[in-house]
Length: 371
Image (cartoon, rainbow, N blue to C red; front, top):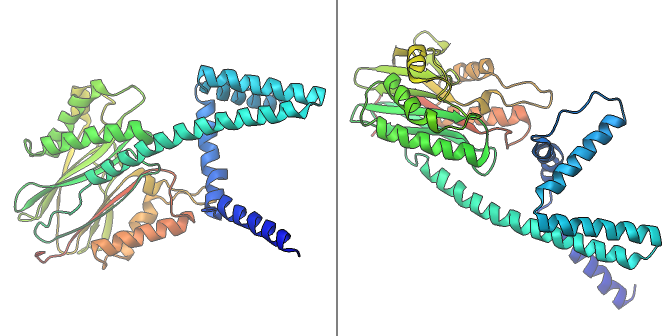
């Protein structure tokens, strides 16, 4: 091989390494499975229902619908140049003048560059929003009495609609809340921030979980878009009296492990989601439950992104599996139990990233005061 050939071959290898930088099997799987499904849903959103037709007419109808939806998502100016590029390419194919095909190729790539630039600018803003949202999560959990607390939070996208917060009310009392806004992404994240603000303000004024959730519903219902609602669990824990009061607004039932009886219970006081009913109806359906806490008892609060996570066989992780996991590992600390749940969940789904926002709060009554 001549020196010139070796130099050319080295240039090709360098370009290949540059072009494939950061590429992995997980990234390809993400594109083919998760991102392609999200893109398909995005372009089908708001589209008309397809007629019941056999192959290939139905498939062609889907392709036509997606293409029209894609073109209409472009700005009018970009849509114009996209159409011109397609016409130039068709002209090149018919006449055999491939110089025009090169012009069409350059035009399409220029439009692609504009779209990528828009996406990167939006991604930068989302990254800032993610940093803000993560910064709003409790950095250091309160150390009240004998409670050992640990939490896990992972949005499905840059930002998410899950929310949790823990507030120390006084020397012996804390309030913990976990919530979930319907949907994912920026709209859900904005509503989650609103929920956090209400939690922080109302826990300093009211002493009943039910009363706080009722006030939250009154404050936010008229401001919610019709396609959105929120679920939440709110608990007040008093380490001096050893009691917990809990209310549940349509959220997943918390898991309570009674160490003395070695029994797992799903706490299911009745309640509707926030934003689904007017004040009187919401308050009438909402119940408050009181539970005594003893040595080594465990409480696990979670969102549906944990229990509804699926494996390759479309089997959900499920509440029963989560409850059994808590019972079988009850000797662990709150942090170790949280890590065990997250590890088993990732192993069950065969991936580290989940399809939905996932939040987990584990609390254990150690029976000894935390210094």
